[in-house]
Amino acid sequence: MNTTLSILFQFAFLYPIVMSFFWMSGGLYYYFRRERHQRPRTEPPPMDSFPTASILIPCHNEADNVDETIGAALAQRYPDFEVIAINDGSSDDTADKLNRLAALHPRLRVVHLDRNMGKANALRMGALAARSEYLVCIDGDALLDEYATHWMVWHLTSGPRVGAVTGNPRIRNRSTLLGRLQVGEFSSIIGMIKRAQRVYGRIFTVSGVISAFRRTALHRIGYWADDMVTEDIDISWRLQMDHWDIRYEPNALCFILMPETLKGLWRQRLRWAQGGVEVLFRHCSDLFAWRKRRMWGVLVEYLFSVAWAYTMLFIIVLWALGKFVPMPDGLFVRTILPSWHGMVLALVCMLQFASSIIIDRRYETGVGRNYFWMIWYPMAYWLLSLFTTVVAVPKTLMKRRGKRATWVSPDRGIR
Image (cartoon, rainbow, N blue to C red; front, side, top):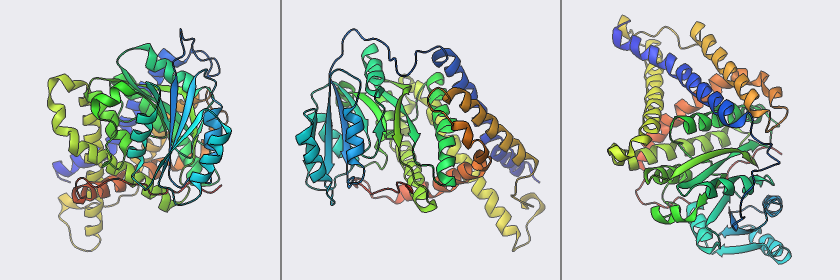
């Protein structure tokens, strides 16, 4: 095997392991430094005053979920808040249900938009209608924990440069193997990544399903972009490029529905991957300024993930070609099936999940029951990341510029 191919193989093997240790070390440091002796979730920190908070809930065809979602939002243990539901051109009876709920609950206001203009536009309309400087944003199928608003507003009021806070989404549908895998993924991967990124400098993205913003910060950067398929990644980069701080608050829980079919999971993760590539193309050139150097770590990490995906694709193509045509010794790939290095990766991933159990046991009981299923995680997560990234790059390049990103009803799992 020639030197170049050997280097590619080493990169393909070492990258997931290095990133796992990167996430584990940062996540555990965050836990022992900030979470270990923190007050319980049900006892949020005291505040000198309680400014009004506005909970924004963009909805599109959420008739099946809106009663639960609005009910959880109205049950917040925070003295002064309002709930604004934005009906973004729903074609079902979402509008009627929201109107009935608004007649029953004085804290709830409803904004009706006449056609599907996308989540970013709905959030912007909600922000303009809000009475508060502090905006808590959740999805139309999410159940907000009763203490979440208090934890997030506490962060926003703790410093003038805090522009956003990202919460801790938890999976509530776990009836299939895919559902159980995602329980482990959100604790051992997504939560761990956010802790590590918070320790090392900047956060790649807030969780679109639960996040809070300072309206002044949003106004400075022009609110959410309506031509990005993932408005949460774009808003995170633009806030941090404008030198606003984004914090992670694991006590701000939100219970969400996730896809439990392969088709639904593929569509969701492809959208996430495309959103990352879109943000990279749009903002990469703006990050070379020295004043924006704190974003370089996020940029380099993402560039390495894209490079890894295409490296793996190159190796797979060489292996497939070797099955049909004679290949030079320097380009012949005998097998792509995991051998000893696959076992090493699996062990590292299991260690990562074990670390996440230590951290997450204070937020959710019974996470360890999914430990067995995480043996499938290395194949499921990394292969999905590989193929969605490979597809997302050309899809983004071929996307018509300026096209509005409208709602597409997602797979909410088998309930």
